[in-house]
Image (cartoon, rainbow, N blue to C red):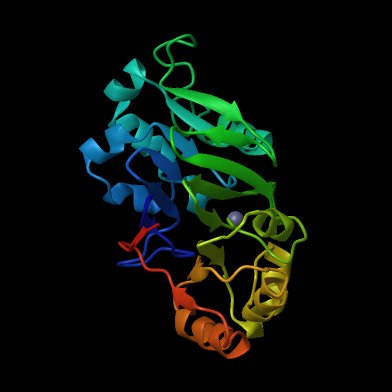
Length: 255
Ligand SMILES: [Zn+2]
């Protein structure tokens, strides 16, 4: 399994992209601004999109992505897997014929360019050699993390979350987890803001990682622009025994 990081920032600025992760060439997790770095040919290869939640930094690239390769998706629709609340938000606020055309009815309902596939925690989707499992996490809106299995390798992505009891038993139930991509949005001095908005700070992340029985390579994501170095210093100080690095757009992980 190849994991290509298209975007992993908690915001935008020159050189920064928001969350989008490409698995091999056909599975996309989230559609933040990072999807804009894919070529037209690469966009055409995407068959399934798994959304963690509705927030714009994870969905803002989707309307323009679908439009850019509409001719491909009218022949073979993009399947959008997401929590029912996320799908409802897309329908009400993005693909609503005001912000953007409703591509779930274009060119017709029967032959639409996008198909919504509602899933909830525990859902398992076989993607031809890659198995994607959804798991509840705890954020400001209903949010799913995803575990992707390929052979005996497991990648886990937390999505946006704060302290939770749901992700860790799922990860611990695998024989091993090789890569964990996990969010930490704010430094410790903004812990109240982190708590209010449903994100980790280094202190709460370190506490939750105490629930993980595996020793994966840990890659940190979704840091707020400008806060990256402070967050990294605090995480590394709190978790000296873990293998932890900062994720960067353009990184390719091989599992
Ligand atoms: Zn969010």
